[in-house]
Image (tube, rainbow, N blue to C red; front, side, top):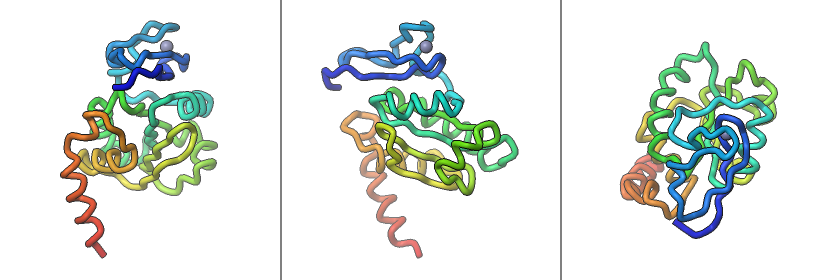
Length: 170
Ligand SMILES: [Zn+2]
């Protein structure tokens, strides 16, 4: 944990919060709406709040593009929520309903769902189409959102093994 101030966008009201590095962000509440900044299920975002989240958060932001009619999306939802609770507050997890926000899917060229995208300071760092299980999702996050925080270090050996396994596949 460093001493820097981290800017965290509230998942409830989209206000920008400043969290001192030494403070446990898991216990932090939004200065505007007073709800917990972390600990809830991944928040659904509109095109407007999506832009604020990916640009203003100092932590990487993971976005699940999904739809109500998509079976694999619904199957992955509880996995996504569980893994989100493990990686917070090092990452922010969001959901975009592609039915209600078609312009976002078009902008990011989403061709199939579920698609996961990882953003850092507004830029796309990684993209993955297709439902993932919990261990696949954890390993994908560790690979692309590398950080020195404990959530990432635990299971690093597992990630390495999985990467080797993947490279051997046709
Ligand atoms: Zn708030």
